[in-house]
Image 1 (cartoon, rainbow, N blue to C red):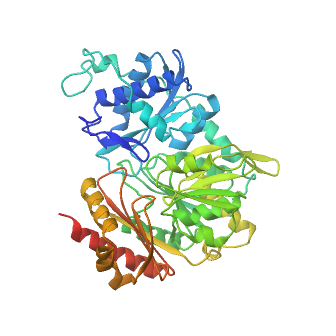
Image 2 (cartoon, rainbow, N blue to C red):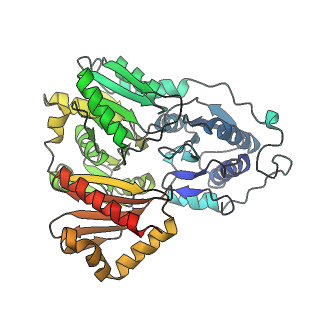
Length: 484
């Protein structure tokens, strides 16, 4: 791990493709399976392991290395084809087997990652510690000095892909949402290079929607649902005007984080869609990171709101603290939605899926709006007026950003010098994850190094969308000035 630079982030192991050699990916997979074996946690000799990947260029090669490690650990890989991360995790959960997803999510194509799932869902932070602790033996005849297979032909036989996971995920939503519930809806599906584009079309079409499939790309496009590209904002408004849609739906690379727009082509932020999805599912206990919009507390809809560090493992950990009779869900500001307990609605059941999911969010929003005879923009307007904006400065060394935050935390005079002229006096500091500063006027500045890449992120919150955007621009300019 130290020599390659491929480390665990907030969602699996990630690194540069050049660092994720066959040997590194083989070693990570071996360590994961050894951990499960030693912990009696769903893997034994002869066990099956489900695998899949997103559509970035390096995913097929990494899948081959992962499959080879599974075989050498005494397991049998099941190739589920190229499907969303939640579809793979759900297949593993329903069949009580581990699963491994090759994905870098939203990060650029020169990077990738490996997301590990136990039969119960995403690995926890304690699982990460268990994986790190493994001593992995690698036969020297397998890899050359560059970490690539010496004899690729001996290790490139992936099993024929199975459609079982695809069909199971499709059934999950077609049996929970009412038949033809989208029959009067026109939905634009922004396909780009998300691995969920085909199954999203199937789900939406089979629920009765008219689906417009737009902007499919064979080249990988990095779409970050927290830092939406300006060109995607322009496209959404253009499509909404041109096609008269009820909404636009998309997702990141592995389709666990959704992008949902209203009928005007305005992308709805993930910490807003999370509140509304939780409401549609009648949740009583909601877990969400500290960076999410405070409208969730101000709305007063839920019995308990738990705030966590940023990252789905922390949301999952918080969900385990709920009472047994709670309907427990979690969401993140990136839009990913997690279900910890089964959701029951009339005679329909949506099984628990404690990993980020994308397609559930737009479906829930459309149903909630339809139940209230509203458009999506009208539905969003029912929430308390709290607005957020976020962005990041790329190629910002992680250690440098940590040092800056430490200096700010240790000397409040520095905080005042940077922020008081723009936001006034601060009243509260939260260090749950990064540095979150709440000012007396209820405006928020939240600074945090990314857990997945050398990026410095900033989240802002205000009472108007224009003010949140202006705050974010100001903070990003400030962060840029700190970059050396």
